[in-house]
Each structure stands twice: as C-alpha cells, then as structure tokens.
Amino acid sequence: MEFNVDKCKVMHVGNTNNNSSYYMEGSQLTEVSYEKDLGVWISADMKCSKQCMYAFNKATRVLGIIKRTIRFKYTKVMLSLYKTLLKPHVEYCSSAWNPHYIKDMQLIEKVQSRFTKMIKNMDGKTYEERLHWLRLWSFEERRNRQDLIEVFTRVVQAIRG
Picture 1 (spheres, rainbow, N blue to C red):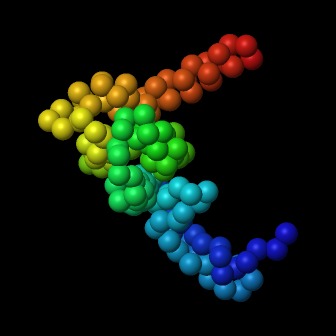
Picture 2: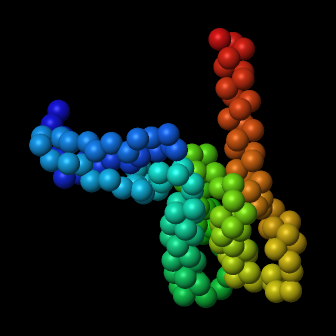
C-alpha cells in the first residue's frame, strides 16, 4: 500500500518526546498539534477541549435547525428529535474523549440544557427539574454509566478468560 505523503502528518505526544523530524520519500512530514481521526479531534496534549467545542458547535447548529423548523414543540416530538438528531453528535465516541475539565463538561451539558428549555411547558423549571420531568439523564451521568458498563464488561471477560 502506498502512502500519500501530503496527507501524512506527525504529532509529538508526551513530555519526554524528543520532537524529531520525520521524512517520507524525501519530504519532511508536517507537524501538527491537533488532528481529526474517525470524527474525533485528538491533540498532542491529549486534552479533549477541541473535541468538546466541535461537538458543542455541531449540536448548536442542530438546535438552531430544530428551533427554526419545529413550530409545536411537544414533549414526545422533541424527545424523538433529541434522540435522533442531537444526542448522536454529543455522545459520538465519548468514551474516547470523555471530558474531565469542568469547563468542557459544562459546555457539553449546556447543549442539553438549551434543548430542554425549548420544550413546551418547561418555563420556570431548573435544569435538574426539566431532566427529571423528561426522564433524561445528564450527559455526565450517561458517560459515567457508560464507563461503568465498559469496566464491568472487561472484568467479566477477564474472569471468564
């Protein structure tokens, strides 16, 4: 298989990396600090802030489309739209980029908060009350649950071994 040298890049990861220059077919490979792979932004410092911002922006665009096109925002309709259009953007591959900084968690959570405010009869309720009334979990709770399921599955596999 031949590589396209123009598409090949180098990312130096870690504090002890000596940041060497790499060459392929006589040309030096471009050094990058961020790269998108399989739809997930990966950074050299392994922080997920860029991915969180990317997911937030994508979900915000979807929220705008829903807000402009759906006139009667009844609960059942809105929850269907949420599950099919919005949630996949925010939860895509989240086990690989699970945010651990408060600012990133709040940014992702803001998407769901803004969405729940759009639903009819949610005026005056707090975010937690809206989640409870709609029977939704916060994104943080969903990610924690997902992590626990993954750990449990790995432990069971190791025991069966």
